[in-house]
Length: 225
Image 1 (cartoon, rainbow, N blue to C red):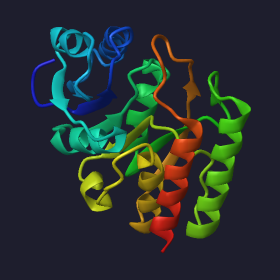
Image 2 (image 1 turned 135 degrees about the horizontal axis):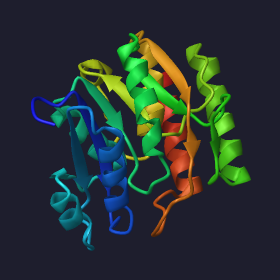
Image 3 (image 1 turned 90 degrees about the vertical axis):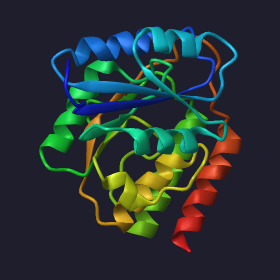
Image 4 (image 1 turned 60 degrees about the vertical axis):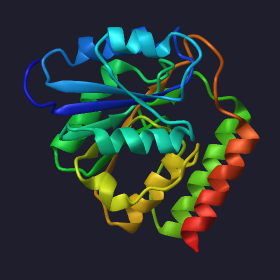
């Protein structure tokens, strides 16, 4: 649709040529009655990710640092009133976009998808990751007097202007944890909505369980001190 974008979708990518077309087409189908923009922030993929994204009308930015850095770059460049972070691997269902949009429209600053409230779930979480996520959620809730059910999940929406208030600086996989903690610190109105995590559609996952778990723990400790 013409006019200024009301919704901005930010998708960090690295070698996602088997997924990005499906992701963008899914977004377009769900948001066909909205003004929107799709921003792909790519880590200089070696495959056709960028070419496919451009062909399908996405704006492409580049970032070589990490997921957190890429996401922040995309969020800061977004022009929409509602900003949404989304993974490229089809683990986030496009049909849930309207739920994330509605959360902001009803007055919340940040709306977070959760796999652990009624209606949510995961098809791609081995026991070790489930245990780690539960441990980190409990720790964050205890230290920061929060009431989260999920922590390490990137399907989220934001009211325009909130990202600047959070002053995010986590460059890697700890970005979701940093957002959750700083949302509490800055007294943001936060809503959790159910989300079902699907299995990666194609290609190799970027998550490294123990390495990224260590980064998340460091993020929690750094923000607690």
